[in-house]
Image 1: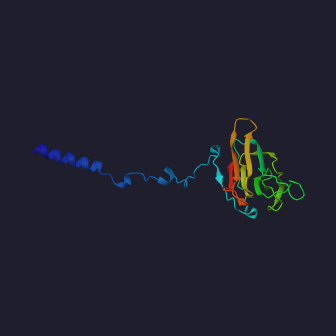
Image 2: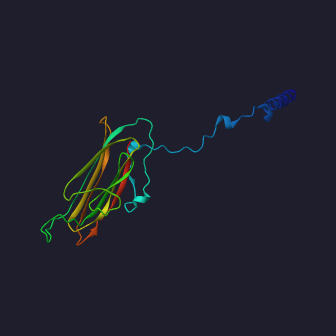
Image 3: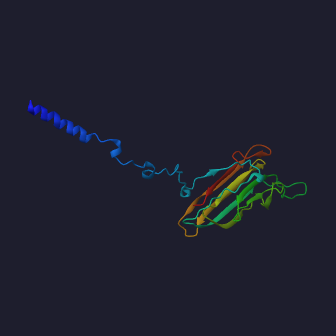
Length: 206
C-alpha cells in the first residue's frame, strides 16, 4: 500500500514537471527565421539561343526593338547577313532583261538598333537598299550581347522565282557561334504569288 502511494506521488511530480505552460517557451519570430523574399522569377539563359518568333505580316510602324540589357560576360560579335533573289529573265519588247516582277522584302536590325529593309522593288515600305536580280548582297556589322539577331522575309514573286537570306553571328573570341537563321523560299505557282512560308524570328546574342 505504501509503495503504491509513493508510485502515485512520483507520477504526480513527473506530470507537473512535464506540463510546462506555453509561457515557459520563448515565442519564435517566424518572419525573421523564414523571411518571405517574394515569388522567385525564373532565370533566363540566353546561352540556350532560343529562337523567338515574330509576325511576318507586321507593319514597319509596329516595330519595337526586342533587345535586352546584358551586363555580365558581355561578348562582341560579327553579324553577317547574306541575301539574294532569283528570277528568270525574259527579253521584253526593247530587248532588255532588266524587268523585275518580284516584290520580296528582307528586314533585319542593324548596329544602331534600327529596322532596315532590303527589297527587290522600290515600292516596299521603307526600302533602304534595292537588290539586283541574281546577285548576292552581304551586310556585316558589330553587335554585343543582348542584341537581337533578327531576320524577316516575305513577299510575292513570279513563277520559278526565289528569295534567300541567312543571318549569322560569331563572337570575336571565336568560342561562341550563334546558330544562323536561314530562309530559302521558292515560288512555283503560276503567275505572281506569295511565298508559302513567310519568316520572322530572332535570337538574343548571349
